[in-house]
View (cartoon, rainbow, N blue to C red):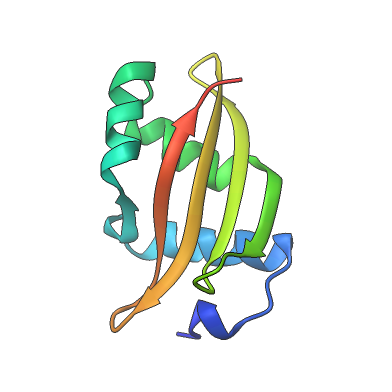
Length: 106
């Protein structure tokens, strides 16, 4: 697998990589503590996040952050509500993964 941190990502390439991660191992979608708290507060579920990652539209990014990770925000309508997912693509010894930073509505 190609290290995402070494790539120059367009939205199309980022989407292909996101789908590859989702298709191969959904445990490679990591939720940070802040995201888990916002999910509880906002009634957003893991399936909403996965659906947004797979089918949503990019509304920000992908662009590199100060650590070199590729950050992005995607938006989709899921379960009848507008869901936004702010996340980053990163890489470790086991390959590429998605870090979900936060979730929010419109």
